[in-house]
Length: 162
Image 1 (tube, rainbow, N blue to C red):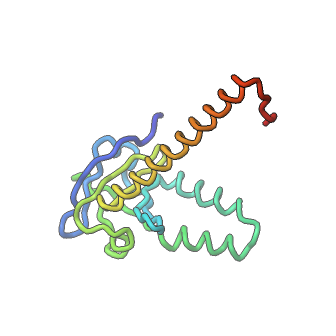
Image 2 (image 1 turned 30 degrees about the vertical axis):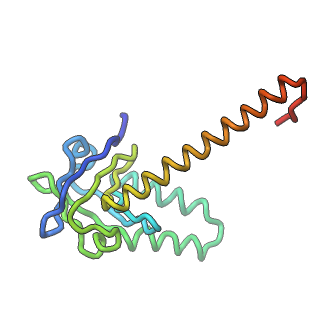
Image 3 (image 1 turned 135 degrees about the horizontal axis):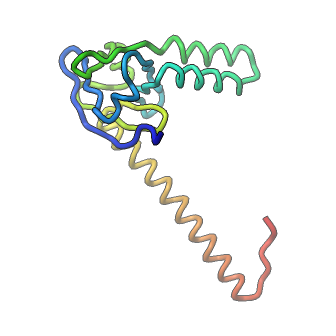
């Protein structure tokens, strides 16, 4: 299965209900888990229950310190809630979760392979620009490194082994 891909713009209604894009409904049918990704670029992450549990367990397994592991699990479970897709293909996003994700009315719904994210359009735009700039910076660095390597090779200089 290819998973969730693409992005779609939808508005929440006055009751914080949001249409799940048709292409995502098969993977997010019935009940699924949502949680806020709290960061400088907050969004709501939507997981199939089995994927959510695997993600939480995998993250916890990476943390050796029991206190830090408990804090991580607390953040994952306490900040999550179950939502259901209604007969019209909508989910109701709790007000507290919408506020943490800076959602008002307009949203961008993004497929991320194994999960879906719901973004405020302005935050999405800023994050998308950051990701693209980071990719361009890495590409520029790789091109510069390749250019230097070609120059040194042309001069007969040996490159250090990796």
